[in-house]
Image 1 (cartoon, one colour):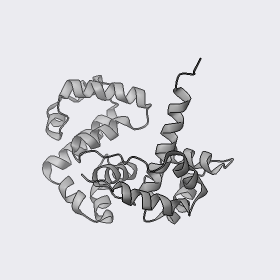
Image 2: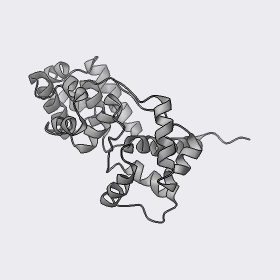
Image 3: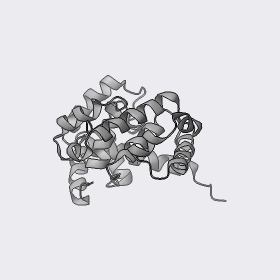
Length: 214
């Protein structure tokens, strides 16, 4: 696991701020964002699957049950578990199927995360998305948080698109295809742009939910 240094991130942020007014406003508001890092392993991928398409609060509750049930969330533990017991934790049937598919790929060696982390981005993406249950969004998040890839980018992330809309003061949020095309100008630092947008969005949410004085 690695992450860009603060100095590297600062230089990337300053460059990005010259290419996009939305990113300039995000950088002005939050400064250099904290890079999210996680150890590369099955548990990281499983957690991302569990958190997909539901609220963070609900996902946290479900994931807590999974951890209580399995203990250490490993590929081997998932393959040994009763799928219905995993569903009883709150995981949907498709998510249990995806967790099982990823676990099988890791145990068989079809998916080797050490190899993924050492590969170039295109090769790493190919190996990840070749496994049933790992889509492009999950693959890009893995490359961002486990590898520290500064140009990995989850193109269809709704949070990123909404943050960009608000910061850019656009009336309408870009569709995924248009947003992906727009983000091309951020290369080779699209991952840094993502962290700027996430950082700003999280700061705004925290401000909105903070207790009011008086």
